[in-house]
Each structure stands twice: as C-alpha cells, then as structure tokens.
Image (cartoon, rainbow, N blue to C red; front, side, top):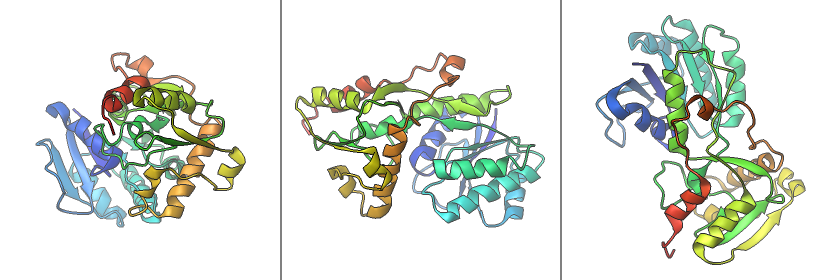
Amino acid sequence: MVRVALAGGTGGFGHTLLDEFARGNEHTVFLLSRKSELPFKTPANVQCLTTNYDNVDDLVDLLEKNQVHTVIFTMNPPTPEVHAAQNNLIRAAAQTAVVKRHLPLSWKKFKQQSIAVLEEHPNIEYTKVYNGHFMDYFGMPHCSSYMLPEVPYINIAARKAAIPGSGDEKITLTYTKDVAKFVRRLVESDYKWSAHSLVVGDVVTLNEVLQIAEEVRGTKFEVVRDSLEDLRAGRISEIPAYLTLYETIPKDFLLEMMAGLGVAMVTGIFDLNGKLLKDEYPEIVTTKTRDFITTHWAGTGQ
C-alpha cells in the first residue's frame, strides 16, 4: 500500500488518476484541493484535504500528518499560480521525513521548470513521464474521458481537418486510462526510477488518423494544411471544435497552444524513443488508434 497525495485530481487527467488509484482500495489517496467541497463523491479510500499551496510550512505539516509517501501533481491550466503551487509542494515535500517520490505530471512548460526545483532536492526521487498526446480527443464526445474537448487538428464530428506540416510525422497517442495504469505501476514499484518514463499507446501519423476517421465516417474530410513556418509564427487554421472552447479558454491562448503543439508534432518531439514502460509491464494492453476511433465513431451518424 502506498499513501499518495494527488494535486489537481478534480478534473482532466488528474481525475483519471484518482479513479485508477482508488480502484481496489489498495492505496490510501489524499486529494489535495483548495476547496473543502468537491463536485463529486469520492471513494472510501480517498480523503479530501483542504490545501493552502501558498504556505510551505502548512504543506509540510499536511504531508507529515498524513504520512504521504508519493506526491503527484497534475494541476492545470498553466498559470503563474499553478507554477508557484507546484514549486511550493516540491519544497515542502523535501522538508518532510516521509515524502520519498514526486511525479510532476503537468504541462510541458511547467514540467521543465519543476524539474529544476526537484534537482535542488536530491532526497526526493522523481521521473519525467512522457506519453505523447492524449488519444481521448479523437473519441470525443463519445468516449469516456475527463479531458476538455481540445480536439487537435482533426475534427471528426465536423468532418474537417487542419493538419500541421505534411501529416506524415510519427506521433505517439495514448489513452488517459492507459497512462493512469502505468503511473500506478510506477508508484507501486520499489526500483529506482529512471530519469524518463515513456508511455506509448500507439504510434501513428496524423495522415493515418485522418484516413481512419474518413473510413469510419464513410466520407472524405475537408482538409487544409499549415506549414511549419506558419505554426512557428503562431498562425494556425481553425476547426469548428475550437469555436466551442472559446467560452472557457481565451481564443489567443488556445490557438497559440495548438500552434505550439503542431510545431512539436512536426519536429518529432511526439515520436518517443527509448525504453518503454510497457516493456516493464507487458500485462498492460494499450489502446490502438484505429480501434479507439472505430469504437467511438462507427455508426454514430453524427
């Protein structure tokens, strides 16, 4: 049994992790939240702890009082307040006698910054988990997922696509529920973590995803392509899926994020190479893109 503190477990990938760690009642899970009341009922082995991320001493007391062994950080969106919260949590964990591990599972921008803070505290073991991009987006709104519908580039519902680059670059797609299974096994492990932990559900190209989507929907999509030059300049073609997000995510921020994501895909950052966690845990069967899209879109008529 591991005593795990999860920051950011009320939504998105953090909520997926909460479900995974709560499954089976094998672990004690502490859900760290600024709010004392949650919008959902937690399982019996999950305790919600009202958390003040602004005070390191308070965080030290909270972690020690609850004998937390591993801290997982998934809080979003990437605001300065979120960045400060993660850094304070790392510093607090390093001051305790109980916390041994920290998983900085957050946006890439903050992950790199949090690693620098973690390196200042060698008494805390950590690993950088990379899983490419989440497959969930290509099953929305029909798949089970806590992620916001930030559908990237291929809008299956609208039968439209705006492909970054040539579309032939290899990218890794992984379903959030599969990522959560690997993270759980990492936390349960007793071996020393490596610097990087790679989770690969499937390796495809966006052109292959587009072809699968067209086959499943039974029609050709309306397609435009954005050059790497345009993406680097922050210029990106909109798809209908983005329009519904502007009420919750500022338009400029969303398009900048999607342009940056496109640059990463075109330049090979999402083509993960190295020792994979599925080699360590072959019993975890990952979801494949064709199966995922077919399952959630075949026969929908939408």
